[in-house]
Length: 109
Image (cartoon, rainbow, N blue to C red; front, side, top):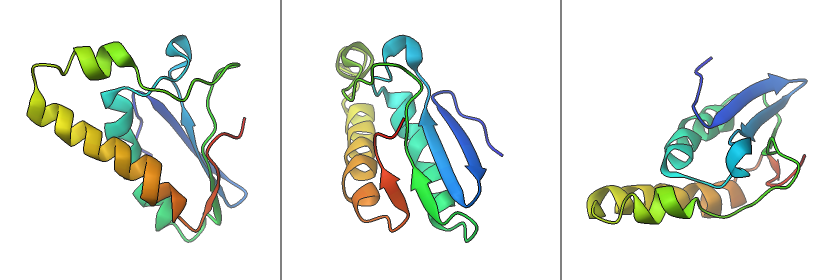
C-alpha cells in the first residue's frame, strides 16, 4: 500500500478509511494534502472490497480550513502551481466526495 506524507490509509471490514494526518497543524489542508488525496480516493472508489469510505482526522480539534502559509503565501509567486493545487482541492472536496457512493462522512472521528 502506498504511503503518504499527509494521510493514513486503511481498509478493514469493508470500510476504506483515509485519515487526514497533520495533527500538529490541526489538519489544515496544504498543497501536499491535496496532491496526496486524489490517488487514494480513486483507488477506494474502484475497490470492490471497500463498501464505504470514511474521512476522519487525527486530532482532537479538527480545523477544516487551508494552511494559509503553505497554500497562499508559499504559492504566491507560483501561479501555475497554485492553480493546479486549487483545482485539486476544489475537485476532491466538492463534487468528487459529494457524489462518491461510498462516502460516509467527511468529519467522522
